[in-house]
Image 1: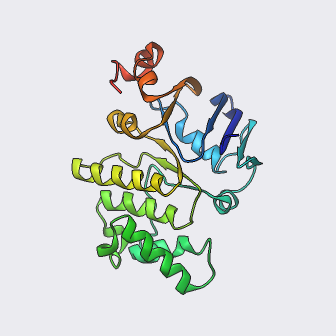
Image 2 (image 1 turned 90 degrees about the vertical axis):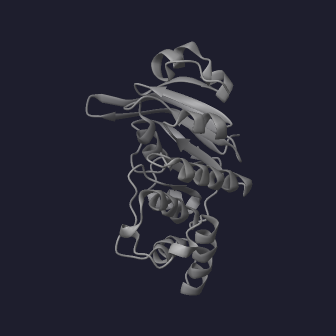
Length: 240
């Protein structure tokens, strides 16, 4: 069975169907890209998976345990962490203290939390900024901090919501390197991203949403040459 299983999930807001009967799985150790036009339902899907919204219909399973209906902190403790499209650091706290706060999900002592935090900020390239107050960080480093905070919870699965948006080419390369190293650690990743060259390069498989429905699923090569995806989103065939 897949590590994450989304089974017939729909989510309604009043009379609006944000998601309609969506099913897919995420295999342990892979990177699954979730793409589609603005308003396709990608972030809503993340919000259902990590417990911000319960599904109106359908169920979500993680490691064969039903998680739909649980609270976000419960799902995080089970091993599913996420970042947000709009980065949300604890703005008056330093980079290090932001990550320490996340580490307390797994440990009870300050010493243990600091040990996790120091290792995590070194891994994400934020060690030299450890004492900087987070609201003063440029966007690229705030994006890294968002990833670091999620990693400090020691997840088995990481949900990344547009972690590359707004980055310059150097920051983009650094972030791609971090994502690949996260995968090397055995952490499963589901990522929302509009940067097609990035998503095609790092994903093992891709699920395409359009108007709240699953349009296609396959390898980057299959998705990049799928006529329905090209018409709805890509505009032209992607080489992959």
